[in-house]
Length: 178
Image (cartoon, rainbow, N blue to C red):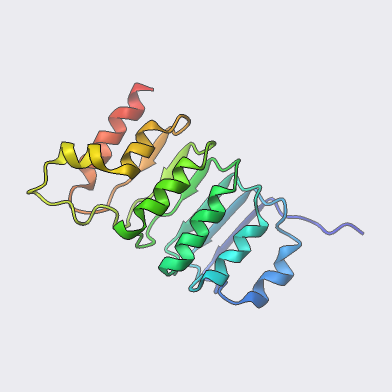
């Protein structure tokens, strides 16, 4: 008897930080293409191990997840191995500037990525009025990776600090040219 597999899965408000959760679901998610996790707790790096079972993802949503820095770094590494990932939504996860390098590497390692949502995070909280915005934009590795990504069609960076709308406008002008 063949075990059925899922193509799409949405979980809301679940605690996935326990390894006991992964075993029963592991056999069902091997061919999963779309995964949506909203308000899910992956509090420790162990919660991200669930993602290692789904390399076929094309769409991944993690909104308002409870992850620590180690779990985010591990998750970004796993996402980088999802070669077919086209849509990534990481809205509202309190991703800060301390994770920008890891996030940049994930973007650079995701050749199929077309749509990226990073709104409602803390990626540009330290940009101030005293900063020369064009210099900040030119020197930021994440923005450079987003602007030069060959397949990216859209990015949402709104609500990432006081000047996120200016940064968003800068990126939008790049995508309108293509």
